[in-house]
Length: 510
Ligand SMILES: Nc1ncnc2c1ncn2[C@@H]1O[C@H](COP(=O)(O)OP(=O)(O)OP(=O)(O)O)[C@@H](O)[C@H]1O
Ligand SMILES: [Mg+2]
Image (spheres, rainbow, N blue to C red):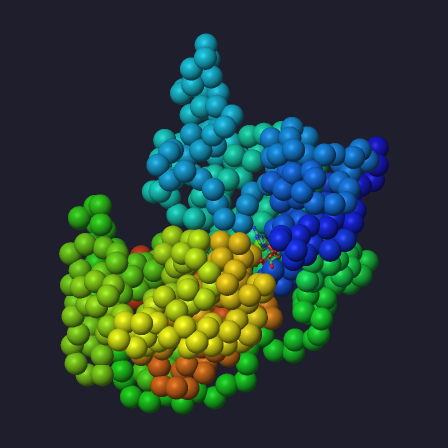
C-alpha cells in the first residue's frame, strides 16, 4: 500500500475568477495527524471542501489520490464512502433535534422501514462514551453548549467508518479544558490508526498534536514541515504563514486610564426558561475611561450572560441591579436603547447575531452606524465606502472588494467584519466577547492595536476571552467569574495564568 493515504496534486479552485487555491499540493501519511496552517482566507477550508466533495470533481482542477488511487468525488456522500469525513468550521447540527438524532441524521438506524428509536439511543450512548460526552442522548442540541456540540459532531463523524477525519478549527469555540480533551481524543484515534487533518489558528495545539504541518499562504503551498525532523517552533510556523517574523504577539502599549466611567452594581439575572435558576449572582464591576478590563472564566461561568443581560436585556429574566454611565444611572431595556446609550456588544456567535450573510461587507460594516453616516435619513454612500475601505485595509479583510457578500468570506474574515461594524459605531463602552476567535496570529495583532487605539481615545472596553494569554496580554485589570459570580479582581501586573485559574474555579467569598 502507498505510504501516503492522501495526495492532493496541483489543486486549483477559483470563485468567479478569483483563485482561492493555486496549484496546492498536500501529502498526508497514513496514521498521522497533519495540520493545515495559514492566515484567514489562505484557502484551508476551501482545500478541505475540495477533498470532501463539497466542491465536486469538475469544479476544481488537479488530482486527488486516496491510497494511490485517483478519486472523482461527486459529493460528500461519495467521499464518506471512502472514509473521508469532514467536520466543518461552522457546526451544522439541528438545534431542535436530540443529540442522538443529530448523530444519526442522514444515516438513520431503522428496523422494518421505521427509525429504531431504542437502538438509536443505545448506539448514540456508546459513541458519546467514546468521545467523553456526558449527557442524556435525548437532550436537544440547543440545550447544550458549543463545547459539547463539537463532541456531538465528532461522535457523528465516528459513527461512520472513518479513515481520514478532517477537523476545521475544532477548538475555536472551546475553552482550554474542552480543547485539551478533544486533542487527547485525536491522539487516541491516532493510536487506533486513524489519520487526521486538523486546521487551527491555535499554534500551541498544533505543536502538541501534529506530526506534519503544511502551510498555505494566499492559496499556495508554502511548505510541509515535519515537526520532529525540522525542529518546528511556533515562530517558525508564523513566519511561514505571514511571510515575516512576528516578534511580539501584543503591540507595545502604555495605557492612559482616567476616571471611573461605567459601573454595574448588584446585578442579578435569572434563566430565561427556568425562573428559579439564578444565572448571574450579585455582580459588581466597573470600567474606567481608557481602560481595558478583562473577564476570565470557564465556559458556563456566566460571562456572556452578564454582558448580554446588560446589553439591552438581550439575555435573561427578572434582571435587577443598576447600570451607571458617567455618574448617572441609565435604563437600558432593549438593544436599541443600549446602542443609543453608547454601548456595543460584539458577539461570540457571529452567524447568529453578528452579520447578515447575504449582504456585502460594506453594508454590514455600516449597519450599526447608519445615523452617523446619513444626512436626513439619506445614507452618504461615499462616506460609507470610505469607512469600509478603511477597515478592510486596517484589519486586512481578505476579499475581492468591499462589495463581496459576507457569506462567501472565510470564517476569520467574517469575524473581522463583525469587529469593524462595532468599532465604526464608536461606542463609549465596548464589550468584546471572544473577539479573536478564529483569527490568525497576524490579524490578531492588528485587532489588538485597534482595541488599544479605542482605549486611548477614552473608550471603556471589556474583553471576555477564554484565552488566558489574551486576557493577560491585553487587559489592564481583570475580573474572574465562576458559576455566575465575580470571584476576584486583579491588576495586570499581579495576574498570572495560575492565579486566574484558581479564581475561575473558586466559590465566592472562598
Ligand atoms: N463561496 C465563495 N465565493 C467566493 N469566494 C469564496 C467562497 N468561499 C471562499 N471564498 C474565498 O476563498 C478564499 C479562501 O477561503 P477559505 O475559507 O478557504 O479560507 P481559510 O484559509 O479557511 O480562512 P479562515 O482561517 O478565515 O477560515 C477567501 O478569500 C474567500 O473569500
Ligand atoms: Mg476556514
